[in-house]
Length: 231
Image (tube, rainbow, N blue to C red; front, side):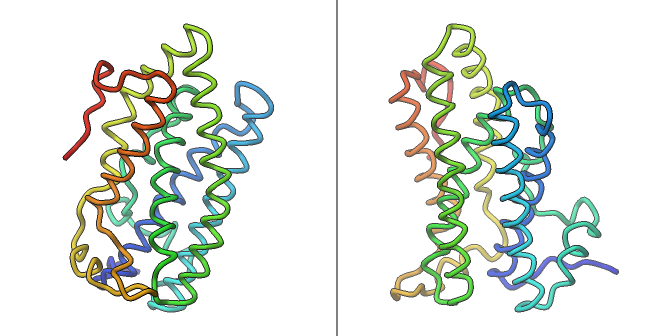
C-alpha cells in the first residue's frame, strides 16, 4: 500500500510527533541490558516503553480521526523516506554520554510540544496531551538529574558530557525545522481563543532559552563550548 503524508497540517504535525517518539523509543530501548548501572538500565528501558506508547496513542488518533492506516501499518510499513522523524532521534545510541545528552535535549522539546498541544480545542487531543505531559515530566527530571550530576562530577565525567553536548547540540536544533503547512497551523485558535501552536521557530527559541539556563546553572560556559544559539 502506498503511503501519503497528510496534507492537512494538524495530522501532519501529529505524525511528526509520533514518528519521533517511535524512533526515540526504539533507540533508547537498545540500552536494555547495557546501562552503565542497573538503575540506568531500568530507567532508559522505562522511558523507551513510554515513548513507544506515546507514539501508539498518536497513531491511533491519526487512524481513528484522520483516516490513516492501522497504527502498526503506519509505524512499520512505510518507506524510510516517508518517516518524519528528526535526525537527532535516528542516530545510533553511541556511548552513554551521547544518549543522555540526546535524552535531555529531546525530552525538553517534547515537553514544550505537549504544553502547547494541551491548549488545542480538540478535547481528545487536549486530554491526551495533558496525560502525556504528566509522564514526560519524569523523563525530563531524570535527564536533568543526571546531566547535573555528571557535569558537576569528576573531571572525566564532565569532559565526556561536554564532548557529547558539542556533538548533540546541532542535531538537537534540527528538531525544529520548518515544515509545509506550519504557518496555517499557527493560525488555528486554541481552547482559550489564542493560537495554540507557536511554530517551530518560537519552540526552538524557548527550548534554547531553557537549555542554556540549565547549562549555565551547571557551570557550562556555553559560548566557550561553541554552542550556538540560532536567532
